[in-house]
Length: 329
Image (cartoon, rainbow, N blue to C red):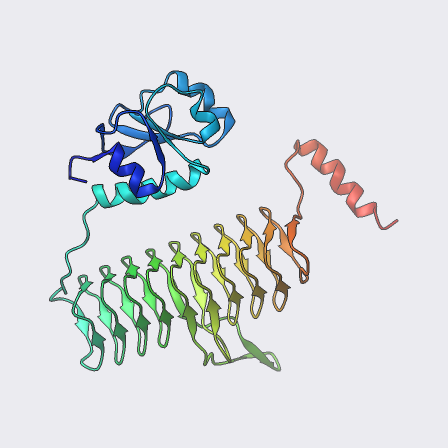
């Protein structure tokens, strides 16, 4: 692989695909099946895009073994084209975006009691507080705040303008995007007459390995005990995870979803966009929750769950709303 591109032979080896075509063709990027040029790779994983194979200008196309029979051009063939595409995207990211130089900015404020590994990159105006620990190959972007007793594992990338409050623990090979806040207090108050009395949050947030957290997401620290994000969890932008929530291995949560306090979500679940989960419920492994669903009780069996009303004409929706009110009668 060079700055000019990668041969199809090398790309096929890197992503674990079978190559049909020109071993030595140099390709330099990815694009859609309709927009790709002769030096780019595309992919088809859905039948509705198969007609584009007859007109695409792509240098090579990632295809399933069955679909590759429909295409005479260069192809990268495998059981799961979408997975091969994901692997190829990582290869081209390495090609197109060189790794950050491991330097520490002179404008960074780093407490003497912190432990900083030899090979780290710390951007302009970063603050690293007392007794924080930053492992090798960590990249911390400009204007980040790292609180007291925070630990960040090997290979993690923290993008600019991120705040990690005190005692947050981040695992290895994580990606934390801009604007994320981890370790802030959750909504915890007790009533004293007409006045709210704050419940201090004394726990931590513990994030596992290979976790990605989207921009402007907020994860609250535990009130008593910890908020736990398991390995390989993927969290989209603008998600709120409240205090003492536990999320199991490999679960993915789409944008604008909110999970209330002390809820436990199992492994390999998916929450589509704009879902809401009330507090103190439990969701077992391998549950898929469709978009805009409100989860009001525990889910004890794996499967697909939905709530809400699909889109319809406004006039039809008004009639249905009247009928909903009359259901009790």
